[in-house]
Amino acid sequence: RTVRLWDTTTGREYRNVPDGSKSWSALRVGEGAFFPTEPREVFAVDFSPDGKFVAAGAKGGGVALWEARGGKAMGSVHGHADTVLAVAFSPDGRTLASGGVDGMIKVWETAAGKEVRAVAGNAKRVLALSFSPDGAVLASGSGDGTVRLWNASSGVELGRLPCDDREVNAVAFSPDGR
Image (cartoon, rainbow, N blue to C red; front, top):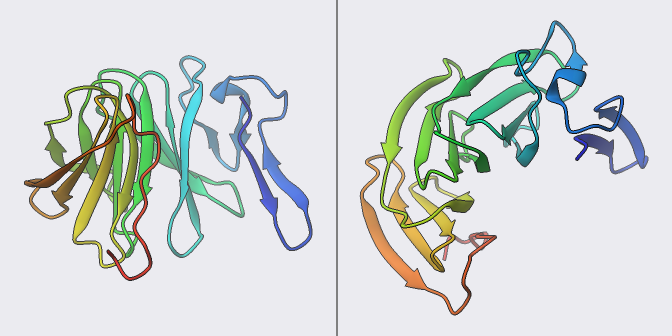
């Protein structure tokens, strides 16, 4: 319910939602608040590869981006019909993928906050996302029990890996990309 950031070398917390509530409107950092019109629950968080930015997916279809250290609001993007359950930065940090209850994957240009691609094909909600180390492939875990592999540039499905689970809640690539 609370977004908290810690310095793992000191164990000291340096950012959180002050009142511990689910409300993003309570998180006022730097120059502004995210989702100022109504409270949002956070369901997914990812750091940019350089550690400078944090993205968070929330109820209502939005993704907020802010500076990790200073807390300055960088903006938010909205494009999902419902809750965003997964976010992942590409290895170069130039794009951000989001997936949600609507079964869609959206790919955003990080700097401009512009949607560059919408990928349909998940039969149910998108629960997890991960880019391959070279950024060429995007993996999605879905509520339909599959892992799908997508060409990160075109959005074309490259393959489907059936799993025994009803839902795939996490996906990751090994460091060598296999």
